[in-house]
Amino acid sequence: MMQIFIPLNFLGFVYREMKGALANIEKMFSLLSVKPGVEDLSGATSLKVTEGRIEFQDVQFAYKGNRQILKGVNFGVESRQKVAIVGASGAGKSTLFKLLFRFYDTDAGVISIDGQDIRGVSQESLRQVIGVVPQDAVLFNQSIRDNVRYGRVNATDEEVDEAIRHAHLSDFVQQLPEGADTLVGERGLKLSGGEKQRVAIARALLKKPPIMIFDEATSSLDSRSERGIVTSLREIAREQTTLVIAHRLSTIVDADRILVMEQGRIVEQGSHSQLLADGGHYAVLWRMQQQESGAETLTAAVSAP
Ligand code: ATP
Image 1 (cartoon, rainbow, N blue to C red):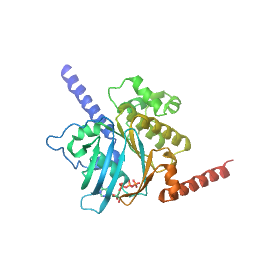
Image 2 (spheres, rainbow, N blue to C red):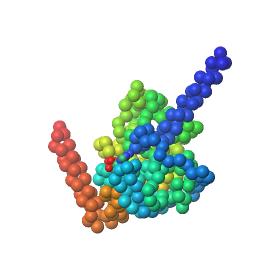
Image 3 (cartoon, rainbow, N blue to C red):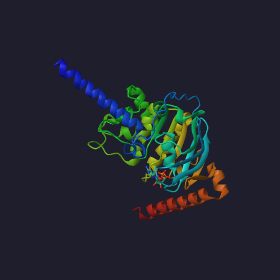
Image 4 (cartoon, rainbow, N blue to C red):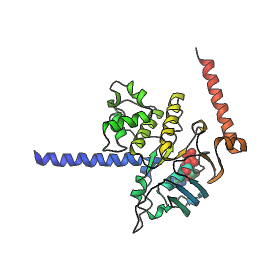
């Protein structure tokens, strides 16, 4: 009996570890289809984060054999700043994140964290300090609480529940038949895009890395989900250096700085009010989105019974 029990127990452990690792990386940017393209240098050191400052210096990059995607990107993010990146589809926003996570090495230029070139540090130590909230979080067929726990597998129930609160999921969870023990995922309750993203936020809050990258869901969110995400984002940004790819400009008006990308370059940067005053690409995008949301509100009001 003992002989059977130990291997099964061990297999269970391996399975849990693998799932933990998967959730940590969060299948970001279809990660599973991306083969690791970089290796640690011999003598790679462990990244030491004191402030969480990020710097991109003249970063250039092309996917193997393809056209140049990043054409000399320069920006810095100070400790605990919230910086948002906006721009048309294909401008290169996700590519910046992939390079920061070192799925690929830059062709030219340097990315550093607290003054350490990320090419010189072990990938494990790099990925440990970066939390990712992907657009489409992977949920397992387990309870909400267990899904959140993948952020830090040895967290206590109290810590998990606190992360759920901070991710503004508590109201939602309280309405569920078995609260945080309700099963979600394919065989359980289906969550909306916004709810799934808040589970991912709760995971990330539990992990508490000094740097957080947040890829805002493009799927349409009802205004309540959107407000929930905005407040949880604020929660994250209070203590961590936060980089956000934003699609709805209304979610990032309070960012310390907004970078506007176009065809692999940062073409404008500043706060929301500075960029509006400048009257450039951002101001045009903002007006368009305001008109769209005004039109939606009007349509909703007209079609209401
Ligand atoms: P979106 O808002 O649509 O997510 P984005 O600004 O994040 O767009 P990226 O995903 O960074 O844009 O893509 C920039 C360009 O790089 C696009 O033209 C895209 O097709 C190309 N690209 C992305 N991933 C790869 C890849 N693995 N191999 C080759 N080209 C890629």
